[in-house]
Picture 1 (cartoon, helix red, strand yellow):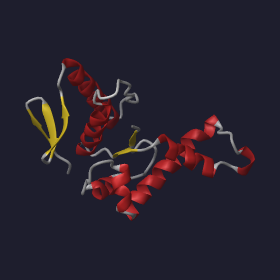
Picture 2 (cartoon, one colour):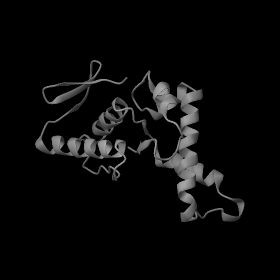
Picture 3 (cartoon, one colour):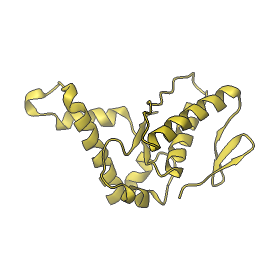
Picture 4 (tube, one colour):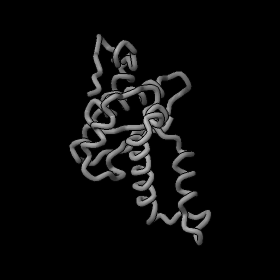
Length: 160
C-alpha cells in the first residue's frame, strides 16, 4: 500500500517531499484535485484535472503527488505522454482510415491503450518506471490484479 505522510503543510512519500501547500492557492488546487479523485473512486461524475500554470509553479510536483494520492486510494494512476497515445492510435487505425480518427472509435482506442499499458505493467517491471513516473510502487501489481475488468475507467491518466 502506498502511504503518504503529512507534516505541517507538506506531504512525503518515504523521505521524499512530494508536495507542499506553500500558499492558499496551492492548498486549494490540491484539495480540488483530491476531490475529483475521490469522486472518481466513488463512481460519481469526475472531471479531468487540467493543470495550466507558469513555469516553476509546481505543476509537476502536484502531478507527482496526485499519482501517489491515487495509488494510496487503490486507484491506478500513471503518467503518459500524449505522443504515446497518438502513436498507439495511429498504429492501430484501420487501413482505410489512415490519418482519420472516427470519434465513435476513440473510446475503444482509449480502452485498448489502457489495457495495453496494464498488461505491460504486469509483464514488464521496467515499464513501471516510465508509467509511474518518478516512483517505484511495489504494490502496483496487487492493485492492478484486484481490478476485475480492465477498462479506460480503471486508470487516471496525466500528462506533464
